[in-house]
Every structure is written in C-alpha cells, then in structure tokens.
Image (cartoon, rainbow, N blue to C red):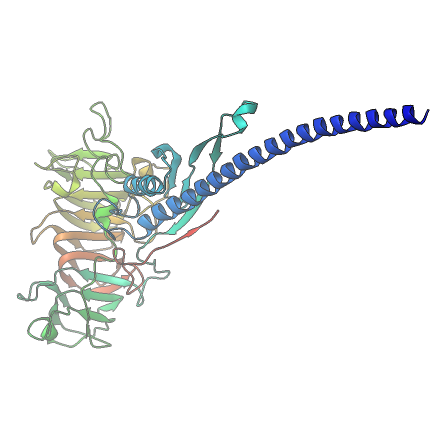
Length: 462
C-alpha cells in the first residue's frame, strides 16, 4: 500500500509539473506579446511627440515670418505682414527639415485674428502589432501660434503726439528735397513733422508749431537744413535724427498686384467693377476725370477708383494714369483714389472720407454702402504712385472736410490750403510742398512708431 501511495504522489507531481510548464509557456507568450506591443506603443508615442514638436515649430516659424517681414534670406522670409503665401511655405519647409511632410492645406493663417494653425499628420509602421492586424497608426497634432504684426501704433487723439507730415527723401543736395513748408496767418500745427532730408520754408503771422526732426546725413548736408525766412514758428526747435526712418504707414503693402501676398487674382473680363484690375478696385480706367461736366463723370460714393494709364492694370506700381477731381457744393463721398497723378480741387461744403476699414488690404466689400466710413485717418484718400513733382496736388478752400491720408511715395505731395480752416490728416511723400493757412491736426501714427520698421512678436497659443 505504501508503494502505491508513493507512485500516486509521483504521478501527481509529474502532472503538476506539466501543467506549470504549459502555464509558464503561455505566460511567456503573453509577456512577450505585451513587451512587443509596448515597443510599438512607445514608437507611436515618440512619433506623436515628434509630430507635435514639428507642429509647434512650424506654426511659430510661420508666425515669426509674418511678425518680422523682410528679415532673413530671400525665399525664407515674408514680404509683408499679410504675405500668407511665403509664411505657408516657411511652415512647410520647416516641417520637412524636421522629418514630416505637410501640405499647404494643413497650414491655416488668419490675418484677422493674427494666428497660424498647423495640423501635421504622420504614419508609423507597426513592428509587432501587425500580428494583431495593426499594421500602422496615424499620429495627428495641432499647434496654433499668434503673432503681433509690426506696424505703426495708432494715435488715439489727433494732435501733438501724432504724425502730421513725413518726407522720405534723404537727399539734401537741393532745398526742394524733403519738406518745404510755407505758412501764413494765424496757423497752428499740432502734430509731428519728420523728414529724412531738409525742412525749409517761410512763415509769417503768429504760428505755433509742433516738434520736428530732419535728416541724419552728416554735417555737410542735412545738419544745416532747417532754414526759415521770416518768423520762426517752432515751439521746440527741430532736432537731427540719428538715422533714416521708413514710411510710418506704407500703403504700398495695402494695394498689391493681383495674386501677390493676400491679394486675389485679377478681376475677370466679365466683372462689372474693374476687369483686369486687383480685387480692391471698384472703378478702373486709364485716366479718370470727376467733375460732372462734359466728357467727365460725376463722383460716386463708396468707390475705390484706380487709374492705370499705360501701365499694367494688374500691377499698381506701374500705374501712370491721372485722376482729376473737382468738387463744389455739398458732396459727401466715401472714396479712395489710386493712380499715377492725382489732382483734387475742392470748394464749398464737400466732405470726402476714405473708403475702407483695413490697412492690411482693401477689398471691394470695404466700400459697400453698409460699411460706415472711418471718421479718423490711417486710411488713404489719395495714393499717387507717380514720380513727378506734381504726383499729388490737393487744393482745399472754403469748408471742405477731408478724412484720410495723403500718400505719394515716389513723388511730391503738394498741399495748398486757404481760408483758416481746420484740417485733420496725415501726409506722406518722397517730398512735400505745403502752403497752408489754418489749423493742422496730425492724426497719423503715434510719433516715432513705424509701419516698416516696427518690431513684431510671436508666441505659441496651444
């Protein structure tokens, strides 16, 4: 009986050992499977992390491009703070350099909210999970970066702390280069006058003027450029700048050629607005005359008039057409005029305000009657692209009201004002020739800020 018991116990131990081996084998399979899956999961997480890092970096790279235009080598910088095409290409190139390919559709830039959103995806092949039918996984990430566009800071209240007049010409060899300012009567200037070259002129009467700076180009030229005959009108004597400054408001960025920057394709041949012109033009032609007389048109409100002359209608920088405006009576117009040369003569009680709301690009919709016109400046009424000494001529007498800026970046802006009226505006030109009598209120940017040299910023939102 003892032998039988021992035999039975040995058989039991043998069976248990066999079962343990089976359990151990199964456990090893499960453990190896879990380890293999862990390797795949780790690779998925690593790829997702890489995708997120690329999303963050690409979004920041595009935002930085828009916040700091014209910085960096050609092909990797934005031409303006609305150059969404180059910003998108920067994001794509940055992602590719870090191992992930993205399409333009995965980069969403909103120049209204000043944000860049990048949505990259990446596929990771499975090493062991394919046994379970999981051959690869797709990792998706999202990153949003915000950017502060560089630019001139708006001036809250027109007056002494706002820009009134800016001349870009830094050549002081001629007294007509820069600003020539003649004042008569009891004229008051509240606003900053800036010139990269000379400031000269004559004054008579009881003037009270704001501050001014003149060009920095050495002792032999601009340092002796503040020349006055008659009464010295300055409350604070003009000072010499340490360096040239760019246009505080560069409106060339707001009127780009068709299909460049944020501008749409040219208007189609069947367009009822201005066929062949950029989308912001609501009325186009070689030359435009507005006075209601014979062979002329009556000025229409809520328009952006574009005169190309013999230039390419698609490219505003080539326009050499003339725009002549002669108003009298009690017209109230909300318009902007862009052409090679522009001449405005007003008499009576006319009110002319600029058309549109944004200095980051105009569209025809900005001139819809349902959109109220701005009551302050920082929107151009006149943008003359020409290079002549009469590129822009504005003659104001009587009770005219102008709400908007005067811009002649390549030629001379001429302002002639009589009647001791009050004019609120901001004038920019290569050169400026002004003959005034009355009160001038500058409502340009805050003095010292600049549209082309302002510093932008960018940061990751999520």
